[in-house]
Image (cartoon, rainbow, N blue to C red; front, side, top):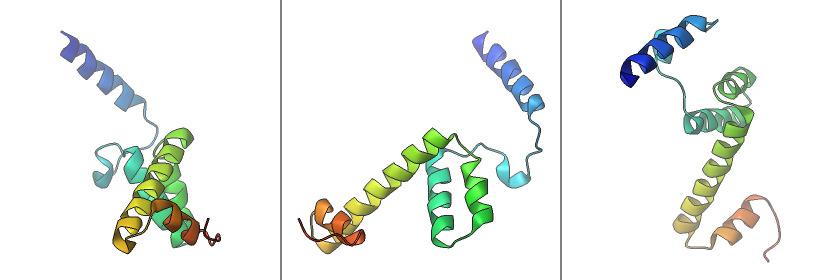
Length: 98
């Protein structure tokens, strides 16, 4: 019974959407996908993609995703450089060694 309710509720929500989905957008974007697109678009200075990615999730979710991406990037670089995450983070930001 709950499956039917969810299915009907999903159809109602889909029918209320203002924008039509393209074939590429058949599934909703998750916050990590939004964060990855947002950060890469910022690096490439692509304002159109920045705006698009920012619209995929709430601002709070995007901030969480960007923070998680930053943490994972620092950890990966620290492992690659055989250094501490603190040292790598300070180096990336141009701060003196602590």
